[in-house]
Structures are given as structure tokens and as C-alpha cells.
Length: 443
Image 1 (tube, helix red, strand yellow):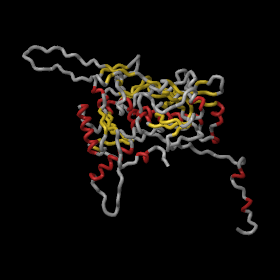
Image 2 (tube, helix red, strand yellow; image 1 turned 120 degrees about the vertical axis):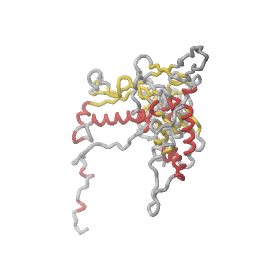
Image 3 (cartoon, rainbow, N blue to C red; image 1 turned 90 degrees about the vertical axis):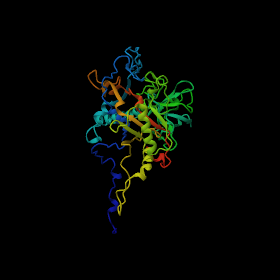
Image 4 (tube, rainbow, N blue to C red; image 1 turned 30 degrees about the vertical axis):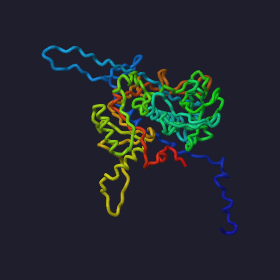
């Protein structure tokens, strides 16, 4: 630099703070997307047809016994053989998501001084959270369990395990900073407390440690302990009159319809003990290669007396098990690329003509066969939408210059033929490291 240069006197951007301002162009792109093949299956499930949730219950007949009585005789008519009187029962569940906005903030947060119109922004956030709920409800059970407590670290922190209350599945799949959680005290058979996940101390994805924001609401009278259950809650104060846990208030997702842990004895008011055909076919995995999967397909077809059909059956598993099966197929592939160019990888796994769907939100050690003609999404009053029966989707907030709105739907997931579905359970992937396929890098 030449002697006497004025370059050192040029102001930097930092020195001009207050004299310049930011110009926001376009919308903020949310790159934290959550997509699930199972949720899409339920979203695109067959039309509800004759299934309606009006009235006290939706009662349906289930034909779970073979109809007999036909025979050859010398002209004498046989006695009457009774019909199968089995009845199932289904009720809708309520699902909500609520938003609020300060009216003055809404006026200010528009135009060039904002990323985008604030109303559009919070609507996008709302439907992102709704999509996350759809994933959780499609895969989980009607119990609504998020995870289970492993141990207590302090009056604010605890370690969890077993997402969906399924042994070994990632327990933090659906929990984020700011989530409103409550815990169920198993020993006292009641609510233990509630709180918000701390936004200051992030979730520890290596140890599955969760830290809450308030000890007074989280442990108001008792200490959380191993074996207690974690749920979403309506508010972080369990003394509020509108407080409730999602406990036993979720729809019947795969956790109920398929029940991979065989935890249920009665589903849709039908006893599996009295009617064994009401149970899905579940089998413990031994090797998880293409032959075990092919054999399982044949066994399921025999149990349900419906052949496997690529147009009707889908196979869903976590990414790890799918890649384990892919490795077992490696020696059977026709190597079409030879010579100087070496090409690898694969686009999909197919066994006996049935393609596999990979779902990173699914149970980590379950390979499920879902018979799509036997999966229904039954709505009461239409699809999810803002409640606006009083003329507007917005309602005034009492004693405050603001407004709020909520989205609602009343529905349930349903399968009139549970025995058409099946699962290989307890899968071990010796050639695949499961943690490599976790949502958050553990390093």
C-alpha cells in the first residue's frame, strides 16, 4: 500500500450500523422439511365410502369366522348355522393447532421491512406443525406416547428412550425446542407435571437428554422417574383448567392397527383372544435377507388368504433395514455396467415384485406390510381447516389487542381387515449402523 493511502479511513459496514438497514427479499425457505411415506398413505387413503363417524359410535360388522353350513344330503335340509355376530366400534378424535397474533405487530410486519407477510408466515408455520402431527399420528398408536423416561438428571432434566413407546426407536423424533410436554406418573397413575422444552439448553441428541424451562411446573409435587411416559400437553401449567395430556387421545395409527409390539388385547372393541383372525401376522426376524422377506410374504398371504399384490401391498421400513435387505440382494444383481465406468448404488429394493418404501420416522426395527385397500381415513365434517363457523377464522382475544385462530379436524384411522397387514419385528442389521440414519448427526 502506498505511503499516505486513505484506505484505512474507509468506513466498514459495522461502523455504519444505524445508518443502513436490511432489505428482505423473498420468503424465508424452511429447509427443515418433514415427510413420511406412512403419513402419505393415510393422507391418500381410500375414500371413506360407507364409513361415517356420525352418532355415538361407528359400529361395523367384522366377518372373522368362516361361514359354514353347506353340505350334500339325501333331500333333508340342514339346520341353520348362525351368522357371525362380531361387531367393532370406532369413535372420532379431536385434533387442534392454535395460533395468535398481536394486531399492531401484524400491521408492522408487512412490506419491505419483513421477510414476508406475517399472516402468511405464521400460517406456513402452523401447517408445518400440522404435517409433523400427521406423521406422528399415522405411525404411532392411539396412546399418544412420545417416549419413555430412562432416568432423572435434575429437577429440569431427564433422559428418554423408546420413541412411540417402541423399544429402541429414536425418542426425539417429534420433540423440539419449545415443545409443550407433560409427563404421566406411572406410580401415582396421574399427571406429574408439565413444561416447555428449554430454548436455551438445546436437546442433546447424543444422550437423549431433555431440559425443561421451569422446575416449578415440571415437578410441582413429585419427581419424574424411569418408566414414566412423556406426552404433548395443551399448556405448560398442569393446574390450568384447560390442561390435558394427549394420553389415549390420538388416532389409531400403525401402532394400533398393526400393533408391532403385540401390546393390545382388544382393538376397535374386538377381542383378539376370541377372534385370532383379528390379529395382524407378526413374526420375529432372524436374518433379514431377501429370502426371509420372501418367506414372510408367503406366510402372510397364507394367513390372510389374499395373495401379495404389488398394486395393493406396500412394504414400509426405516432406512437401515431397507439397506440391510439391499445388501442381501447384491450377489443376485445383473452387472450391466462393466469396463472403465464403475457405477454403483441402487434406486429401490423389490422382493417378489413388492417395492419397499423408506420412512425415516418409522419404527427402527420393524418391516411392515400394509394392505392399502384395508386402510381408511374417516373424517367427520371434512378435512382439517380453520374453524370459522361464526363468520371468521379469527377471534378476538379478550382484554388484548390481538386475535387468535385454530385449525381443527375430527377423524380416525381405521382398518376393517387388520389381519391383512403384517410385520417382521425385532430386526437386526449387522451390516448397517442404525445411528447413521438418525435425524440429527450424533457427533
